[in-house]
Length: 391
Image 1 (cartoon, one colour):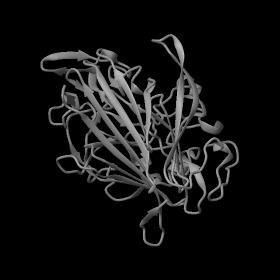
Image 2 (tube, one colour; image 1 turned 135 degrees about the vertical axis):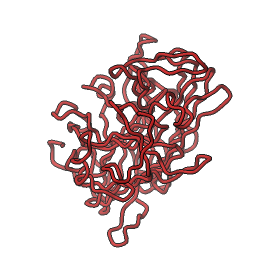
Image 3 (cartoon, rainbow, N blue to C red; image 1 turned 30 degrees about the vertical axis):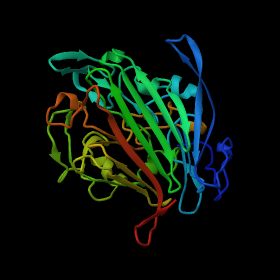
Image 4 (cartoon, rainbow, N blue to C red; image 1 turned 90 degrees about the horizontal axis):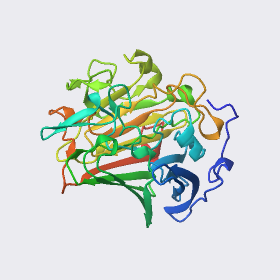
């Protein structure tokens, strides 16, 4: 929770906390400025970090930096027109690089998101060993995954594309991979993200964005999270042992993981076996992959609504179980981020898919293009009819 008083904001008025961006009255636009510097260990020099501010005429604002293609701010109104930042993050580069631990706030993670069991896999009979950065396993691309890299950036119209070349052997992965992440903000308050990748050798690729949301406001902590209602379009999940999938695919029916109908988090979090959600849901989708509604989250007190759409087979729903219980992780505005203070909806392939033949395809081949589309819609939930309106 933030120790300073809540700042109330009237509609169409920018917060002093975000004085640096201008509201747009003519439709979607992008502005670019500096977000400090980053010391590149390979180049042995400091390089500039660029920030890109996406706004629309509804005064919705999203900010992204080219360090990790990271979303730093998402500013949206509530049902009374009061704006708040609903995305956890830091005010400066020092936060992203030198804080207690940056738990991938808002970043694009890879080469492979989530876990690879025993940090190894085989392709065509050859075994590859990747970084063991979480016990004996591999998580989110290793010690210095895509989230800790400076990406090139290019603006075209109202889109900004970040690109990065992951070299052959990086963190133990085979092949050089060219990855791109393109963001845009629509007039309908949809944040669109398209991720693509190509490779020079067969290699697993599984990208995701690791944004942490709290629709009550980024500083509202567990009290705010408890007020959320969550619904996930998935009838099955992948059970784990020590966070590594067993290879089974089980129905959510009859379990505390069943979110096929909206559930208030304060009523289900205490009953989860692992002290919160950190689970891959198998999205109810069709073949070939099409973009479907993955999850719907509402915060009834504010009326804020988030809908997530994707063409990926899975989504990791995470309730920030591993954020610290004490006030040691300081975020934006001097606030402290703590356990169960936010949620993530990480659209992706199933975890450890490269080691399970019954999971969706995990290996990208030369000549193929990995594609991953996700849409975050920010709206207002009307109390009378339970329907959504444009923010």
